[in-house]
Image (tube, rainbow, N blue to C red):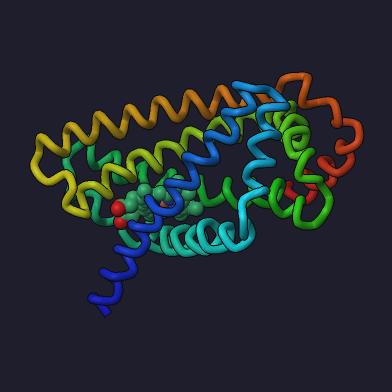
Length: 228
Ligand code: HEM
């Protein structure tokens, strides 16, 4: 049983970096295209992704299944390991706790985010080329805007600090100096990714994304009402 749980933990850890970490960076770049190129830049990126061969297969095996495993097993790990915090120094103690807290926030956010975007596209409520307008509608509500800001900071922290744990647990950062340098690098990643995500988020508030708003407004209201 102990041997099994070691293996489950290793799979959980690996999936957090690859493919989920890889997807997370790709997702950031898609959204950042909205900041860099506005509506046109964003949809060009969306079109490129949807043009990839076997896109549904890639989504299932590189996103949905790894996310399901990492998310559900992560909730179990977070629930189980509450007593381990004393094994760490002061800062690491906090990082350990924050890794778990941000995992739970990310879980709740990801379920809601997928529901209001990808699931609605699958149900045909929102066209894939109206998803920017959908985001515009959601973000113009201050409550949802701030939920997004908090969740983005939590998810990026979870990923960046997770890279530190990964480097330590897989023997990449072994000595105290290597672990300290890794802390600086991963916190640098946290700052850069957070800034880029928040710039992308604000790009969706631009009026250019509101163009199709009238057509999708009723769909968005329906989706949000289901979410509340
Ligand atoms: C969906 C909800 C999620 C939950 C509940 C969750 C939970 C957790 C937990 C509890 C850990 C700590 C494991 C440990 O220290 O043993 C962890 C580690 C990690 N997570 Fe997540 N996570 C979630 C989503 C994500 C996502 C979307 C990504 C990628 C962007 C990610 C990337 C990582 C990484 C890289 C680690 C470090 C792996 C390691 O310690 O070796 N997680 N996660």
